[in-house]
Length: 214
Ligand code: HEC
Ligand code: HEC
Image (cartoon, rainbow, N blue to C red; front, side):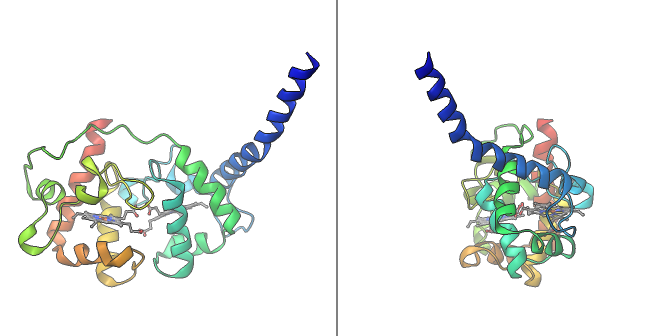
């Protein structure tokens, strides 16, 4: 009996850093960071983390903590720039970034229907998303962002169900050179190859996938 108690106590101790890490992340998300300029994330990214599509506030669920942390460091380093997020990221410490991105990655993503590579494109948006335009060296988005744009690993973020305004803003940022944080200009090259109409159409396609799943 004594023996069992001892093991229970020890394993509880082992869990403590994990628990406090998760608590710290939740606190930052709901109330903001140590510095007052690190505003509470919940205000814009929402209690469920699904953002506010019409305002261009992204859904931050369904992505790895590594990807989200990279974005916050990129805002700090000026490889990515945005009027609101530069100040917020700039006022988070490395520990705070680690804690809050862990919390974000644990939030439940929206359900999206499973779309395979074999799906038939119906318009210009789904054509670019599923087939690309190889005559202009534009690969299909799903080649990197995963089937139906659900995201892959730590490097390729999800697009399915994402705010179309946010997606267009990112493409514009790459075109304007205010986002240069992608490896080997993978996204920059693609963004610069898209017309404004095409960017809007492909963004609308990915946002619509989320609506089908709701
Ligand atoms: C006042 C609104 C607002 C608040 C508060 C806010 N954000 Fe953001 N966040 C945005 C907007 C807008 C963007 C999109 C920026 C862009 O278009 O490049 C964004 C983007 C991000 C991204 C990039 C997501 C991606 O998919 O690349 C991360 C990560 C992020 N925010 C984390 C946070 C964290 C952590 C907090 C809290 C400490 C926070 N945000 C608070 C508005 C906000
Ligand atoms: C060759 C691989 C590749 C292809 C094809 C590709 N992307 Fe990307 N995309 C990336 C990478 C890598 C990133 C992440 C860059 C970073 O680390 O911030 C990214 C990021 C993005 C983001 C930012 C999302 C966020 O939350 O930060 C958007 C929006 C995006 N891509 C849209 C598209 C669209 C639309 C297409 C198709 C027209 C497309 N991508 C095709 C590699 C690709």
